[in-house]
Amino acid sequence: MKIALAQLNYHIGNFEANQKKIITAIQQAVLDKADLIVFAELAIGGYPAKDLLRNAVFIEQCQRAVKEIATHCDGIDCIIGAPLPNTSPEGKSLVNAAAYISKGEVVSVTAKSLLPDYDVFDEYRYFEPNRNTHCINIRGMKVALTICEDLWDDDQQNSYVGDLIQELALEKPDLIINIAASPFSYSHFQNRVNVLKRNVLKANAPLVYVNHVGAHTDIIFDGRSLALDKSGNIVAELHKFAEDLQYVEVLNSHITALPPPSVDVAKDTDIALIHEALILGLKDYFSKSGFKKAVLGLSGGIDSAVVAALAIEALGAENVLAVLMPSRYSSDHSLKDALDLVQNTGCEHLLLPIQDIAFTFENTLHKAFEGRNPDTTEENIQARIRGTLLMAISNKFGHILLNTSNKSEAAVGYGTLYGDMAGSLSVIGDVYKTQVFKLAEYINRDREIIPENTITKPPSAELRPDQKDSDSLPPYEILDSVLYQLIELEKSGSEIVHLGFDEQLVQRVARLVNNAEFKRFQAPPILRVSPKAFGPGRSIPLVARFPF
Image: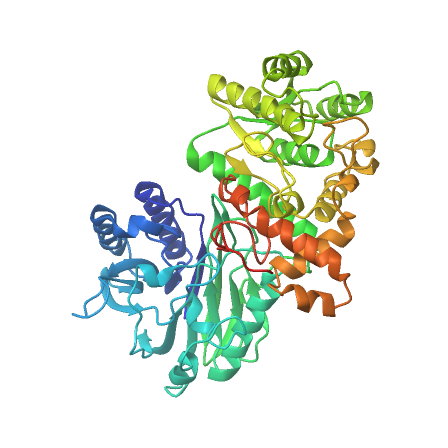
C-alpha cells in the first residue's frame, strides 16, 4: 500500500482555506497513485480550537467539511482528524476522532482513547474518551489507528490506566497509524521519537506518524512527521517548520520511503530550532490575524535587537518599524547600537526622545510625591512613557506591537506593567537571557546584523545612572540555571539546593518568581519554544502563600 503523509499548516476555523489545502493534497496524492492519504489530528477545524468546540455552528461546519472532503476521495482512501459527535448515549457530546474515508464515504470513526489534560492540553474539557478500540481494515491491511496521546501512555510525565498499544498488539496489526497534534519544544523531538519507537517494538509493526505544522498564537507545531520500520528505525522524516507531502510504501510489514528521503536528519542545535520556531511563530501570527506590519521599541539592548532581527527576517524589513526612545539615562553607544542595527537591516525607524515627557510627569507629580525620595516609581514612569508611545503608533498605523521581554525577566518580574511589558505578542518570552545571547550570535552567523557591541556590553535597562541588570539580579548564568530547575523541571527549592545551589539564592529567586505571577497574568501571549512556558501550560494561583 502506498501511503501519502500530508503535513499541512491549518488555520483554526478557516474551513474554506483548510478544505482547499486538504483537497489539493488529495488530488496530488491521486496523481501520484497513492492508495491512502493521512492527515493530522483535528485537521478539520484546526488545533487547538478550544471553546469553539462548544459552538454548534463550528461543529456543524466540521461535519460538512468531512462530507465534502469525502467526495474528493475517488480512488484513494483517507484518514483525517475531526471533532465528531459521540454516538454513545453516555458522556460528552464530542469525540476527538480519526475518520476513515473510502469510496467517497466515512467508513469508520475511531475516537481518541487517552485525553491529555496537562501543560497546554485540556481535552477532557471537550471530548469523551474511547474505551473500546480495535484495529481497522484498510485495503486488506490490519491497521492500529491511534491519535497522538494514545501512544504516550507510558511516558514518565503521564499516568494512564492500561496500555492501548499493548491491547492493539494482541490483534497483530500490520501497521500503526498515529495522527497527531504534537507541539514544538526545543527538547521534544527525541522524546517523541523514543515514544514512537517503544510502541513500534511493542506491536512489532511499522508506524506512520503525521503531525501538524504551523503556529496558532502561542503554540507552534514543528511538523517532522515520521515513518518508522518495525525495528524502530526512521525511514522517512518530513520537513520541519514547513508543509510537506511525502510517500511511503508498506508491504508485508516492511515500510520504505518513496523516493528515498532527501531531508537532512542531522540534529539541529537547540538555538537553531528556537530560531526557526520563532520565525514561523511570527509569520503565522501576522498572516493568520490579517496584519502585515510590526512596531517595537529598539533600545540598543540585546533583547530588542534580537526581536527586531527576528521580525525583519519573518516579515521583511519594509514591514518593521523600530522606535528609538532615548531618555536622559540612555548612553550614546546605546543609541548608536540601535541605529547601527537599523542600518544593517534597512528597517524603518523613528526617533522619539522621552526626556521632556518624563520631566512633565515629574513636575506634575512633584507635589503629590513631596517628601519622598525617587525610587523605582520614576524608573517605571519612563518605561510606561515608552509603552504609551508605542501603543499610540500601533493604534494610529495599525501595526502590531511586539513585546521584547525575555523569559528570565518575566520569571523574576524584572519588567514594568503597561510599559515594557506592553504588546500583542511576546516573541522571546520563552527564551532565557543566556539563550538570547546565543540566539543573537546565531542570527549573526553569516554577517553582522546585531551590532557586536549590543552583544558584548553589560545588560542594562538604563532607567537610572549607570544602571546594570547585575545590580538587581544574580548573574544570568546562575539565575537561568535556577529558573530552569524551578520552571521547566518543576523542582522545589529544597531539591534545587540539594543540587549544589546556594540556599539563600534559591529562596530569593523562588520568591521573585512567586511574587511576579500577577504580572505574567497580564502579559501578552508568548511564543512557546521550551518544555514549560509561562501561560496556559503553567497555572499558578495569583495569591498563593506557598514556598516553592
